Each structure stands twice: as structure tokens, then as C-alpha cells.
Length: 152
Image 1 (cartoon, helix red, strand yellow):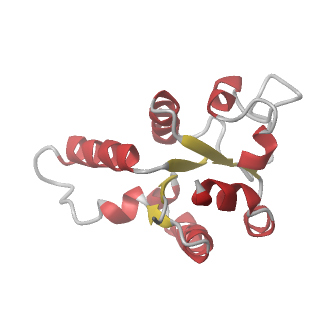
Image 2 (image 1 turned 90 degrees about the vertical axis):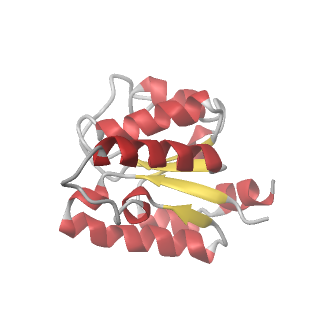
């Protein structure tokens, strides 16, 4: 059965970075992974009436629960708060977690880990590097973690 991956990201808020989403989605589709991208999945909600923000949050939460793993884009200083909440939920639900950061700014108080230590709670202690990516090239060339996960 095809694995489901939740693509947590802040890229849908910007026209420039929104274009990058297609590149991520294409990589995962090539690996036969079904991608749940929150901006795409909620784009039909009307943003000027009613409880649209709550409705979007609830849809995203339910999508995350349905997915087998999360791929979180954690750029920023600090990273996007919505993505951080999604990661917290994924850690609590014991989802497989993949992190992506191509932001060169230091976002950690540790030389060993490139992000807040709490984010690594959801990654394997001894092999977290297999689940952490710093470029699209890294994802394309180091598909082993995704392929191992997809086979389970």
C-alpha cells in the first residue's frame, strides 16, 4: 500500500516559495509516496467567511493523523510556528519524521544538532542524520530513508 506523507511547510504563504512545493511533491511522487500538502488540500475554503481558520486547522490535524510520516520544512529563525505545532503533533502520534532545512542561519544552541533539540525527539537517536536534509539534491541522492520507510 502507498505510504502517505504530510508535507508541513510555510511555503504556501509566498508566491515565490510556493513554486518550490512542486519540486518537493515531484520528488516524493517519483518515490511512489502520496503527498498531503496542506495549502493545496485546503485552498478551496473561503477565507472571508465564518470559521475558515479553525476549519483549516482541523483539516490539517486530521490529515496529519491519516499520514504515515511527516516531512517538515523547518527554515526560519525560528522556524514557522505552524510547522512546529504540526511536528509536535507528529511526535506525540509517533509518526516517522523527516526534517528539511536549507537555511544557513544558526538555529540551535548545540554544535551537534542544527535545530532545537526537542525536534530531534522524533528522530532515531543514533541515525538522525538519515532523516535530516539540507537541499533538494540531498533528498534526490539519499532516498534510502524514504525507501526503507515506504517498504514498512
